[in-house]
Length: 413
Image (cartoon, rainbow, N blue to C red):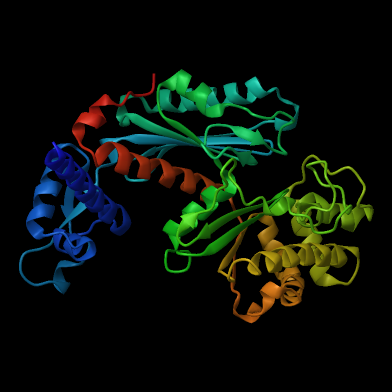
């Protein structure tokens, strides 16, 4: 019996390695897969034949031009788009979007809708998600493969089991069981993820040379969030999604934050905080419920143009971020950073203050070696992170074990 178990485990591992190699490389040849995985050519030939027969992989012509090769043209292996589909849902402040994505990572259909999230009941938020998923899957019809996974990214704190939204500034309601409700409706496994964690997941696939073992993704938007990767693993807490950088205390009893506490980093560096300091000069003023991208871009333009309250607001924001990072780097070695979101378009205004603050901390010993990258639009990254999280689940837990488990999966009702 133990021999049979070892054989099944080995088969699953080898299938997973081949699928992973194809997902990372795009259209690798069997020879390239052998070089990447260390598996023998005969093993890869057997596994690839099985995966092609099961409709998981497909053969394609090699990606290199024929003139650059001698002998028989290489036959590449590619993910079969029709093998399955997943659904990625992103819920953020006053916005809901979703996309149905095929097994090769191509978006089949997508939808975005504006909601007033802070005024909606918890059940209404869940119903909006259910309705959007249903509309999109119905639009796809039989043209798409079976939906095998739904991944939901939300702005806020999720539980460590990826089942529900524990707390979020976008809604007054706590403990919203998104996963349970969506699974009841569609009979498909569902995960609920923190949006910044999904940004970090996407960065690992977009630029694995920079974002690999240790790195940090910080969302600069209406709120401030963080996705943290340590030793190649996404950091989460034992009870929650962890890494609530925006709600670390910058100044005790300081500026009023959206969360209701005072002195948080977000209360100085969130878009609403920058606007409040630049336009009202009152840190006790109630945070704005929403702010347009154009508003924060205009503040940054004014700060670049002349000294005044706008530049002072960005100074406070930069210092709050810098001191927070410096405190983190006193615990973790400095790592590459990506600043994502509309606030990243103004990072050039904040950067001198960020670097100056880091240099004043114990974690700033190597501050000159710290590198920053900026990306102005977080939504594609969040969706891409959801997509990869869901597709990797399909790869490892459904297709790698074999067709028996695949057939056991239910589709969207």
